[in-house]
Length: 126
Image 1 (cartoon, helix red, strand yellow):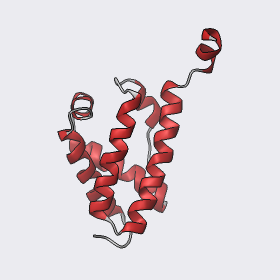
Image 2 (cartoon, one colour):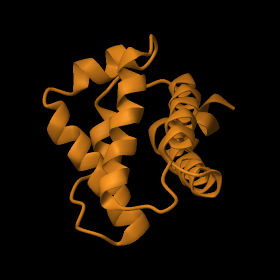
Image 3 (cartoon, helix red, strand yellow):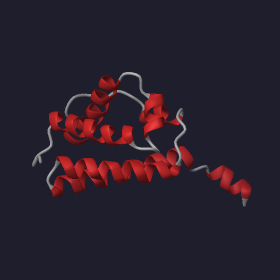
């Protein structure tokens, strides 16, 4: 268990999370279809977290656009968060794990709004 967050242990966390996700019946097929180079993807996602949490390194990418091209459904976010909780609990002491879980919940909410909220469609249906 780590008691601080570093780029190295964020990479460990990301690897642990995706290890769980790839074995998951709901998320695994989506990830396997979307990702060709796992080493690159794990490094890239670890850079995302390191940049956001530590201001370390530089993340380039458009996460929302990247996720829009995949068959993601709202229930997948609950599963993603459950697996993230598992991985963070396995990697960090409780206060850090809980902070990372809260951050992931905010990211998930943002992604759900970006991927599924369509006010114009709601207005037309009403």
